[in-house]
Length: 343
Image (cartoon, rainbow, N blue to C red; front, side):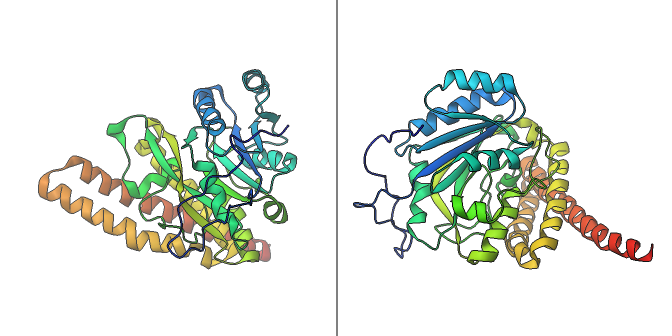
């Protein structure tokens, strides 16, 4: 099954100031695209419907649209009934989001595979903007801008911590520039390149709804950058999606849990790809997170702004927990070979 496009021409994104990212679309249909959405629970079904309808009504429709359901046959049947002729609905060949993404990858024939979270809904021009950078043959992957859609507007996290809810955060690179990794809620890569890199590693990424591991996108795009160079992954700021941010993910408990997962996963990836992979993280800490914590703290002390004091505290706790989990995992990995050698 191949979905028809709404029109015969792709929609180009606005020109990059230097012109490097501007696709020459006249007479060129551009790459074919598969959009992949992975899901596992009925709790996400309202957002999944919103996501799929937004993709199908966009200015650039994909040639293939996959929904991969992780170990939930009843949910798979419901989605298949609702989107009979518009969506490939697949059962996950394995378990967890990484295996689910690979399941669709193995079925796709498109040039570019675009991944979208099941609780994120794109703007009309999203897919066109995600595909535009691929007009440059040196571009292997793309990340889009992700805007949090807060369940409770009064329980927002500081912008520097939007990554906790899978969204573009203060300190993320801006403009059509090279990035080390996209955020998983909206990312794309050339299908052949993902396959050459071995797909998404099942060692990373949530499984069964549990965020016990993270950074599956960093693992994949780290491997891609090793082969294709540091500038092969780009940010496309015009490719906007809105990502549901539940109030439950703004609590202190979730913040600590999420940061521990982030730190330990980053330690695993640092050992695999080297310290260069952490360059952006170091820059984010010293140029964004720490200065912001200081600003919030000063504002809170001077004006009695409780929200500012809470934000400063959240940033400090996030840094402390992530750093301690990172160091703990790195130390553990060093001690295990030493103990084995002594044994």
